[in-house]
Length: 194
Image (tube, rainbow, N blue to C red):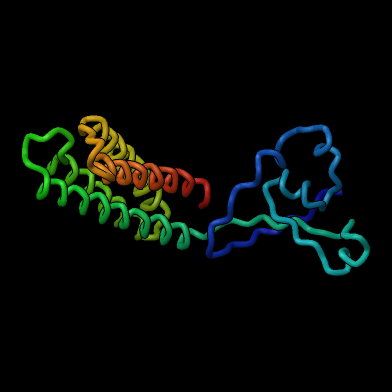
């Protein structure tokens, strides 16, 4: 008997099933239909009934397939994209104003401005909550976040380190590069969530 599956749309993103539960290990292949392991193998959540728990928790559970709504993914991705625009633009503006021109690792205002402009376009497309525009915005956001990450990693590598200066001139661009990579992961994961 196959586990019952229902489609439920929620307003939150749900983590992917673990790789272990989806693997073909011998012990997992013999899981009972409707069990928690069986549900994870099919990419669903297990909901056990209270009467099943009273009898040792066996038998009468059901699998519920959970997915996120387009509006929820759009809100999450656009908010995080806007956050990166603020961080990337703010750090670049500080670098341009505080670091003398000609210093290695100084932010390039034109390149950072282009990256922020691309991310702003991505933000507007994602925030539209229209499926084709959201996909276009996610694609533009992935490209711009990847380019921004590469740009800031180059800045980190070009910046000379001073052991007497803590946290040092590499700290801010390193944190921005990390934020770019996190947004890149978020946008890529958003494709599968909708």
